[in-house]
Amino acid sequence: MRILCKGCEALGKATIRAGCNAFFGYPITPQTELVAYLSKKMPEHNRLIIQAESEISAINMVYGAAAAGFRVMTSTASPGMSLKAEGISYIVGSELPCVIVNVCRVGPGLGGIQPSQQDYFFMTKGLGHGGVRAIVLAPNSVQEIYDLTIEAFDLADKYRNPVIIFLDGTLGQVMESLDIEDEYEDRVHTLSDIISLKPWSSNGKLHRKNRNIIKSLNLDNDDLKRHMDNLSNKYLQIKKNEIRYEKIYLDKKVDIILVCFGMISRTCEKAAEELKKENIEVGIIRPITLWPFPYDIIKHMSEDTKYGFLCVEMNFGQMIEDVILSSYGNNKVYSYAEVSGDIIDYESVIKYVKGIIKGEVNEYKV
Image 1 (cartoon, rainbow, N blue to C red):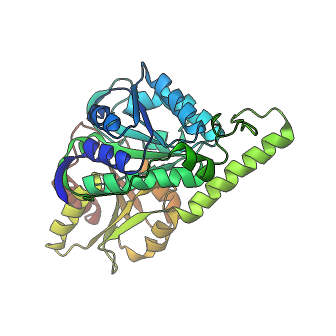
Image 2: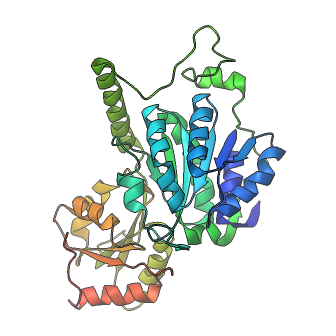
């Protein structure tokens, strides 16, 4: 069945489809529509939804429900992620699965409600204290929001770790067609499911004799080392198995490769189509997992582009640091980074690409 659907609503539909038992959130633009949608739909499916009194409360409710073995989600926008950071670190340290949505808005502090990608560093490198990591998925369409949200719950359970869905505000608000199942199997985890699927869970109704204790505190050095080694090995397995990206127009050598994610990848695809009419060949690498980042494919493609890489981002230039690391100095890397509250338009990308070819744009320097 194909329907017309807003990004935040697609998130909600996928959350129901994935069998989420409980949602704890707080309204903040531009993701409030998700909370409103789930406020209506979760009770219809006999699921729990609580509008918490704060973002801090919401993330700690996530901790409790995840510890009990339930599939659980929270969502917010940029300032709310800052408030959740400590709780996320506790969740990672306790090895609990959950899905966290960040619909990114512009600027530090309250900033504005316009779309941006300024939380890239926050999501991929500074998610919480203690060197924590989480898979970060960056959809670029309403359809991909739906598909990746369902997958996020499976990945969270697979690795007993949070998974982040990272959108800009435009993707949360845009309306597009969505292919969705007419009927689907209910994937919600019942109490009986939890004891077989999540024997580690701390649920008093299921573990009356051998109760599990979930914690992130390790005062014994040997226990601490085992725990940290386990987290490190988990991150290595994620990097080995879960890197996702899309290559566009890269079936042959090109003049330049654009590296972009989320909504901006669609702007770049339009720019590439227009530049092709002028015999300028442009390829695109779109990271779908921002962490783990697809370093190897960028390194591999370094010799297949004449002018190097151009990172196009709605921030001050953040992903470009990962692209520079990926290229290992094998080719030049340029940055077109803009924060204006508006989506970067394809005409601006075209102008920037032509500037690089003409030698009018300097290579990015760290």
